[in-house]
Amino acid sequence: MSKRLNLREFQQNLSSRMQDKSRQGDQVSLLGVQIAGQNYLVAMTDISEVLSLPPLTPVPLTRPWFCGVVNVRGNLFCVADMPAFLYQSAASGSVTNRLLLVSERYTVNAALLVDRVFGLRDTRDWQRDAIQPDQYLDEHGVVWRKLDVVGLLSQPEFLQIGI
Image (cartoon, rainbow, N blue to C red):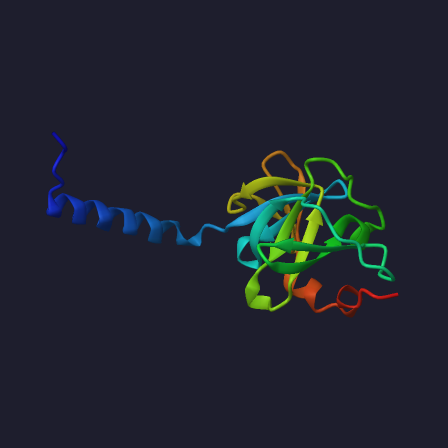
């Protein structure tokens, strides 16, 4: 026999879950990634999806950091090799490489190629660098930098892929 759910219990359970969510509202949702051996934090609101690296279609006469285009469910995304763009060293090409699709709200079909994705990070208990406010120290003393996707998308060097 299936268990019958009391409406009052259901409402109380729903109410308590909603209150728990509102208390957790100040939690920062940041994705930890690695770019050229450096740890970065990317706001989850800046990306729409994380993918394994699919086959890329190269585009001739582009900058060395521009990998080409990729078709994701019928939409073309321009793929930027972030290690090459930031540090002039190409992504490792290993199976740990991932694509971060930039959020649709920026109206730019861009994908950022990173070396590795570590998962979500909660920085509430981390120390912030007083000199560089976009840097954090985690509980192990590891430095994490924030990747400013909005700033990246507004850079003329990033938007101009042709040579």
